[in-house]
Length: 309
Ligand SMILES: Cc1cc2nc3c(=O)[nH]c(=O)nc-3n(C[C@H](O)[C@H](O)[C@H](O)COP(=O)(O)O)c2cc1C
Image (cartoon, rainbow, N blue to C red):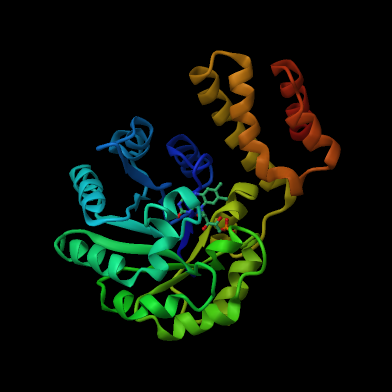
């Protein structure tokens, strides 16, 4: 059975979602937090709150940093080490131009010198287990070959590979053949990430790549929060059981957001985010009714229709 890791998704998997997911259904071996970054000499409050231990109690959490130079990496690691984290993940996959312009995220895939400098800073911190989350390349799916010697010389607990290029963003085909070549040449434990939508998808990856050391799932887990638990239980769950998990998740998210956003329109914005990845699971009409609800009353009625079947 492969470890299942929850992908970081900025705007979706912040601490309250992670905590509720863990309490309601779990089936996930570790939650990776969306990246924190060094801005104007500090960590934004929102980022700090998200990785503070007191907001992540009893959660198997790996924080992620995005950094384009040694100073940024050192400041972020100091903060996270002070919080007591044993593993820190380095983002080498973010395709956002704003981040890449600052030599961060995917920009590291073609910047051997930049990565070598960060690797040196990591070596100075033997108490931390580092892992990286990366893509195949920036414009070419062969870019990883540029940095492979540096990557292989680093001490890493795992390399999470999303086999797309940065130019593809999150769409287009994943390159499974290139993923296979990467696995053959990477000396670290490799975790696969990308487009996993069901427990059966995990099982078929396990079969195709026996050397795999885990899978990381993002949008698929938002769409089907019980996926990890289903995979671990050895079988796909019936529709009703999956819906029940989603109903309980919704109940707790709604309670949390009601408290945080007393204003109905702000509350609705937050709750719509929660439903975004349900589009494929719902009839067009049901989805539209939730997303275009306009008032809390309409929203609750739309949600009730879905859960009362
Ligand atoms: C809205 C959004 C936000 C994301 N935020 C992050 C992030 O903070 N750090 C990161 O490493 N990846 C981030 N990703 C990428 C995902 O973690 C994941 O690698 C990608 O969605 C592919 O996996 P999936 O098909 O299982 O979702 C984000 C993706 C999306 C769509």
